[in-house]
Image 1 (cartoon, helix red, strand yellow):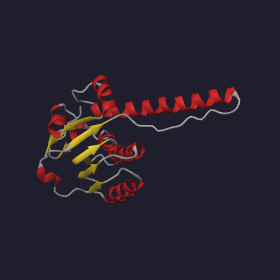
Image 2: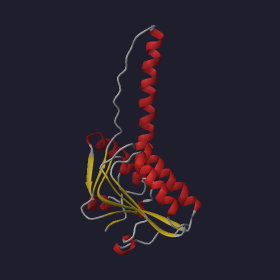
Image 3: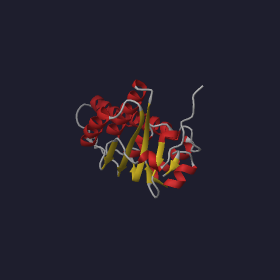
Image 4: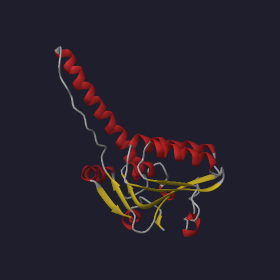
Length: 191
């Protein structure tokens, strides 16, 4: 039997251990890792984020660090606080936190969309090599969709949002205001 985490209030977010702002990239990852290393091993650890997006693979690396460190230190509660904008890769990162450990500030917007690819496929040479190039591009797209959908499943776990609804809305950039995200169960509360 697991105990439900108590809901937090504004005072709990006064001193975040990890503050992330800007593009989700290698520089953010390095800052995140430095802060995570210095974070307490027990009690509440708030990870505050404001981002217009960035590299989804960096977001996944940070998320895996949250998962791994949560297992390493079970007496530590890792909590996400989204401020102003949590777009794209930020929403991917947020999905690594349990819904009961996700919070947004008033007026914050989430934006969820499909991964984007820009790729030219150049065909030249023996025909069998052309088929291999096309299959490689298709394999890359299919693998990226699978990874994307794993993140979508994490994000909606325990919410009222179905995977079908998310897959329908994601291609058009789904924007949600903080209160809407809370009403759908994507976050625990709005602070």
